[in-house]
Image (cartoon, rainbow, N blue to C red):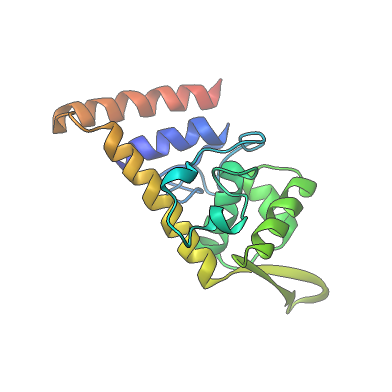
Length: 176
């Protein structure tokens, strides 16, 4: 299952990928994935969003304008700790203005907070909040559920074979 999620993330997130073994919620590289996100409309589905869901509270993560890049912001802060906007931009593969917009939306939704950088008072660092961690878990759970539903009816052998072939395809896509 995780190889399939990784491959999907690579296709969604662009050249650096976003799936199980690196930078996205489950990997794709040491610094997250995506070259320039997914454009103006991410994945996701509002119809099955639970009441406290981050998408319903105005956060522009998957299902909104931030797409996979917004999800990677939360994952990177959760996985690697506080970072500056510039560091996040580099890690998720977007330019600084886009990273600033993603961070502003995450801050407005209460998923990220700004704190003074202890090493440089002129700079702020970004820290994921408990709300951000809950949003990340919710979004990743929905992604995993979608993969599981898509594989319904596949035997264990078919799942393994599909995962291998799809991962190879996604890697080729990333290189292309």
